[in-house]
Image (tube, rainbow, N blue to C red):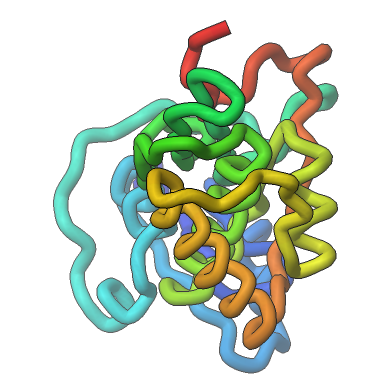
Length: 211
């Protein structure tokens, strides 16, 4: 039997990881600048999906152990591969932090904080901008899930609509907000930002588990 392959599409109609060549081909045929590559294991493909494609195209992929393939787009389930973000705040305002997690592996992509005298809404917004900017830098465009409607609205407006008063303790938070708003003013958000359905799917995988 032919050896199983997994196909990473970094740039195409729908970026992602595919376990059939025909599915991969549909994403890249006729696409200018399409970037894709086959890998021997899902773990290799998953690692490559979160990296700069220039690290892999034209080179041999590193060895890795096999991993079970996630069932993409199972009815009633979130799409995958994807990223998700969440924030946590001890008090309002209080110590705030945020992070990003990969779906379905559960790998933590980044974690920031804690920052003093922040809010949960600010953390959710900063997490969204952070993951969008990170994917822009890496030339990837995985869908991003958030459970915060406010963060989605702020991202769409390009500005944090916070009522938090600045002070010496939270100056780093306002510095981050300024950087985030400046990035949004100078760049386009061209990846899907999706609402996580907590009622159907449970807590978002990036949740800090403090409820």
